[in-house]
Image (cartoon, rainbow, N blue to C red; front, side):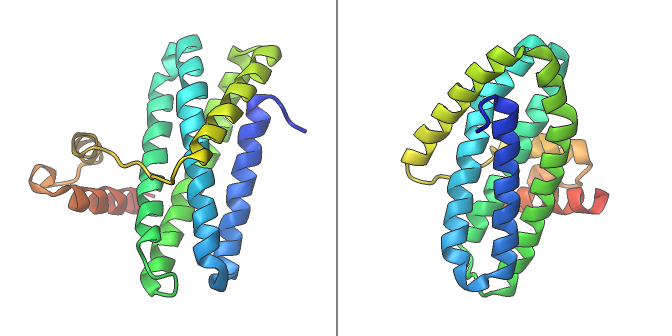
Length: 190
């Protein structure tokens, strides 16, 4: 059984990939699978953001941008999960948002496994990664024990991201419009 934080994170990634596959292949089980995905994804994200990312940012200050980017991607995915939780699992909209979520999370996992985790492995000795794995698991358990509550980016965070992406007219948009515009711009840049 894996104990170091890198192995635990990668196990979570494979678990989410499996949930995505089942969500696509077993539409009759979507309500239960989506609830499982929401709980596990949020717990994983908060575990990383509360326990893992701060250690990496402290050990390797030059990685703060990657850490911030990873956090933004978590929140973006949680917004999509929240949207799915409020969408009829048999509707075409569900399939559209699910596909967007799968693309976004797949992209995040690839970046994390190629950019963040290798740096973490070099920056933190194995014994400390085992301790970090315990803290990560403990935080996930705490989040899993609480009601599911997907987080969302603030309007200011969305405005900042929209400006970075070159979204025109962002300052006059509502939060929901910003979420949609940022998502569309990211897909177009692909």
